[in-house]
Image (cartoon, rainbow, N blue to C red; front, side):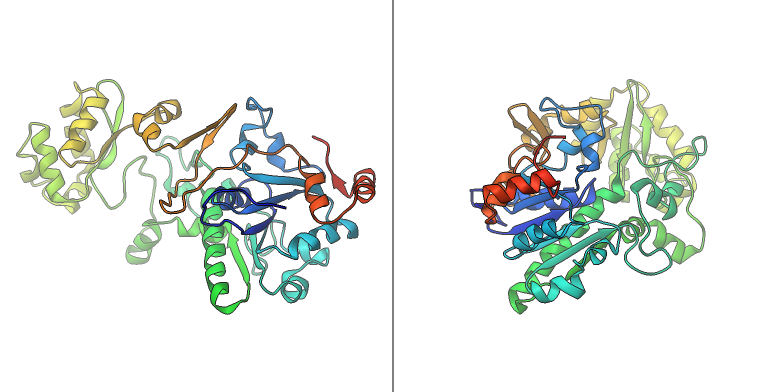
Length: 401
């Protein structure tokens, strides 16, 4: 099979994608955006996110699935069957990377374990396993979901206000970052292979990722032995660093040093504010954060959010309007940064990293289930009769779900 055209960073890289839902598909989509040829192998029932709707996009995909699977070739295989495993082995014969997020032990159950089988058969293969908790330990092999890990690893305990209690973050932040952890591990393993000629196992777990997000809260606990609590939009180490009510909505103002705070006071028409004994240093401002918030909100009560934030930014004080999602996507700077991809009826967000020498080139819209089965199987040397037999016996799937 031929890869995607264009001078991209990963052109020529071949990836076998055995992942579903979020972290794995996000990782492989970023590989595809940068030129890798990604073959997505789905179980007979398809990737679960195909069914997580409404809403559905103009092409009939669930919006969830469409966000994570552009630029891939799609093939449905029942990997519990030996004939389907032979298809996988033919793909792996010239693959660089395999990414899977089955429950630990699943590949071993099928006779496809990395250490026992694949490492010797494909010594250059980079094998990336994504899971909830890893293979071993007290929680090894157990299933993991983003919100469960947010709860278990302390993230919910520092998100929310006293009225709401501990609250799940409104985005799947653990899954999302785990996709980037997997991507980083894969790229480091490929760099290592460039020198050694050998692939290796890469592991990314939701558990490790969730704990890594406890910044600065874990460090605060190590230093103070005081359990972090709920601060709403405020910061445990910095003030003012919070959401504030203006005339027509809320703004977020973040001030990291005394110089910014002086400029802030001057802009508010209160040049003496930094000399108030309650607010002279960051430590003082933290100790009196509620009094400081009251002073700030009184000073901006008659100001509109947009002009206020623009003026503060112009004098070097970081500030932003608290936008909703449509407002965020409608910003002029969003258009300037070309963050939204449009390909006919398909609309999505681009991968955030930008390479100026070998820019990413987002691929085709997300595939239908089994859309490329004939193309992939024929490219692996299976003739028409073999392919028809695969479809009849349910070894491979080619019809839309």
